[in-house]
Length: 107
Image 1 (spheres, rainbow, N blue to C red):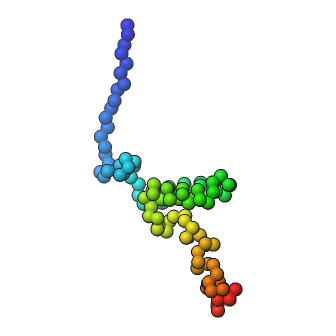
Image 2 (image 1 turned 120 degrees about the horizontal axis):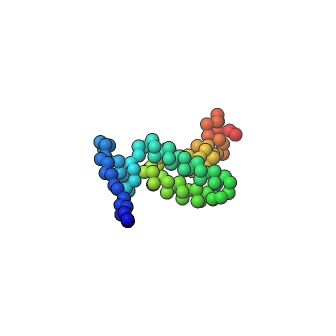
């Protein structure tokens, strides 16, 4: 006595009042969630750079890819780019022979 087994499918209706799919077919996320995911991913890759697994150039490429993936502008204040690194900003470097923000521009 052979029985045919067929997969049963139960269709469930969508109860979400707004579209949940993003433009790339993935789930849409809030800006806060996108920033959190970007920061979490960058923390891993920064650790890799510290441990010598990837180079600074690799990290910059990864930063740009993740920013695009999470819909962040290349000018976003939330990015981990070099312009926001204290040691690479002009404001913290030598300005006209001295240090910015010190009286009479003396070191």
